[in-house]
Amino acid sequence: MAARAGSSPNGTLNQPISNGPGGKVVLKEAVDAVLKSFAKHTQGYGGVNVIDALEEFWNMKKAKGAKFKTGDCVSYEPGSAEKPPYVCFVTLPGGSCFGSFQPCPTKAEAKRSAAKIALMNSVFNEHPSRKITDDFIDQAVHEAQGTEAKVAAKRRTMSLKPQDPHNPNTGVGAFRFMLEANKGRTMLEFQELMTIFQLLHWNGSLKAMRDRNCSRQEVLAHYNERIIDDDMRSQMALDWISREQEQPGLIAEELSRATNELEQCRLSGRELRFPKEKRDILMLACSQLGKV
Image (cartoon, rainbow, N blue to C red; front, side, top):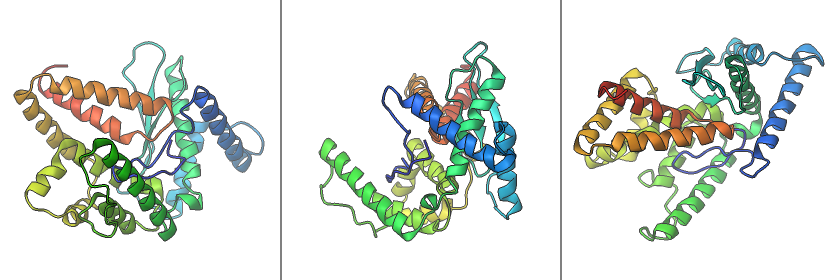
């Protein structure tokens, strides 16, 4: 989940609390601990309505002058299930997205479950360790270099020499450039930008820009102020429709992968904007093709 910082140049900036058999138990205990702490702060030692608490939390941030590129409201989106277990997604101001992480017998419980994990990450995001500082950047880049070295060794297709972290034309260097351009912001604030570049990489747009001799630095500078909106989704959906016409069945395969990734992220309490956007873009492409 986003409440633990890890780093890689492809945007893997969060990990679940636990991947082991007891992971869901640990996750639930961690969420409950945050809720108890928030309840003490807001209502003494009584219970806390997580949906109201989440709304209150972000209203307090807005009152303190927080600005968001992609809307300033907490929004909920129910899953498509017509019978239990129900699923709900919640998108926070700024774009981060979380989903219900427990089996939910009702739609109301699914909404509360999504609010719980979103509130936990919202509160944790205020911790100084979640702010992008020089020390954070150095540590993140060091971890990214380690990840790149492991990938290179596994694929045996790249030089084992570490990438220059100060050259924005390398993967690690571009990652550092993005972090430095967002110094002072928190990881949830940074997540929107990372998701944009994850989508551009997944969709093949970054490769197309490189083929047009655009430098990574130029691309980063251009997209630093962009947001994920209907225009971006529609354009990516058209790209996938074009590929589908050349390779029938491609969208169905990619949609299956994206759906599985989204489910894994949701159940482990991770930030899931990237897999959700992939799924939504592919479903849009299917809809335009008349397949759903």
